[in-house]
Structure formats: structure tokens, C-alpha cells
Amino acid sequence: MSTAAKIARRLLEVGAVKLQPTTPFTWASGLRSPIYCDNRVLLSYPSIRTEVIDGLVELAAGFENIEGIAGVATAGIPHGALLADRLNLPFVYIRSKAKEHGRQNLIEGRVTPGQRYLVVEDLISTGGSSLKAIDALKAAGGDAIGAVAIFSYEFPAAVRAFALADIQLATISGYETLLVEAADSAYISNEEAKALSSWREDPRAWSEDFQAA
Image (cartoon, rainbow, N blue to C red; front, side, top):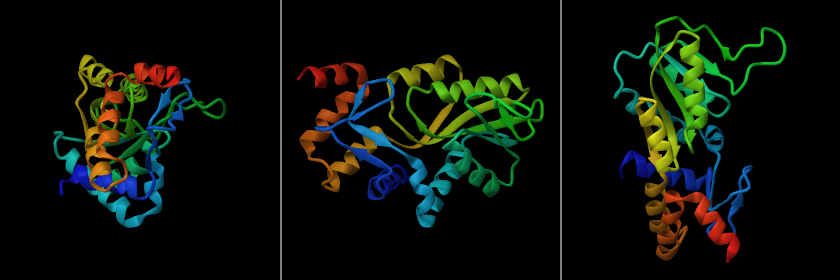
């Protein structure tokens, strides 16, 4: 079993990912979605946590001369810190917005100007939060050489956004692999897997079609 398939199955086993094609979740944007992902759940399972960090180490090997790790708040922080510890590299984390008190930091930790950072996320959706964090890292003088994540919804829009920003992205597992594993383990039927595949291509249209049905 590939690393992508193994992690996809682990996500399903512990409920870090839930698939509900007939009773979808409602996102903060109001869109209906057949999937919910919370990779923070993985932190409660030491053996799975180790498998995830092994996967991130494997991804990190695809980037040259990494000098630091930057976690994206909040869910990217623990996984990023664990990766930095494994690689024996400096670690910082990037907030979604600056603190409103104290030193009003946007980045916690010490960014060394010119240092090459690998950015760590738990989940890639549209890619907006990751790219915003990368912009903040660059503004602080760091060099963002790429991004890694545990899981991606594999939205075409996210692929385009990272390409436009000229940022290399690598993830351990993704949506299509998850659907295969979910069907193989009887979590969903093959018919549901085919229907769910269309959501990734256009989540807004999928949501509108569901609400209109």
C-alpha cells in the first residue's frame, strides 16, 4: 500500500475525515460539502502521528537545502513542529492575523532573513491561507521554497493558485485517493464514490445542485 493510500485510510479510521454525500456538511461560506476534514484528530494517535511525520519527511526530501520549517496556524503548527524536530531545523509559525496585544506578532519565532523555509499545512483547500502565510514569511525576510500538507481536496483552483505564485506544493494524500480507499473499505459505495468525484471539480456547483434537489 502506498503512503498516500495508507494515510487516507488512517484519516477515515479515526474520523479525521468524514464523508457524507447524502447529508453534507455546511461550510462557513454557506457551501454544502460532502467532506469534513480535521487533521488535528491525528495528534491523539501516536502511531498514526508518527506515520504522518514519516510522510512529511518523505515529502521534505523533495525540496533542496531546507533551512527552517514554518507551520501555518493553527493546525499546521503541531505537525510543522514535529517535522522540524525530526529534521533538527529551526521552527516558526505564522498566524492568520497579527496578535492584538503584546508585540502584535504575525510570525512567532525568529525568521532569519534569506533563510529557506518549508511551509507546513494540515489541509489544502483553496490554498488561500497557505499562500497568505507564505506572503507573510517573505515580508519578514524569509525565503519560502515550497509547501507540504497532509491532505488536499485537490481543487483545480488551488493547483492554479500555487502555480501562479510559483510555489511547489506536495501533499501526502488527496481526495481522489481517499475516495478509492473509502470505497475499498466499504465506507462508501462505488456509486457514491463516482458521485463524490464530481464535487472536487466544482464544489460550488455541487452545493447548488444539492440544495436545488
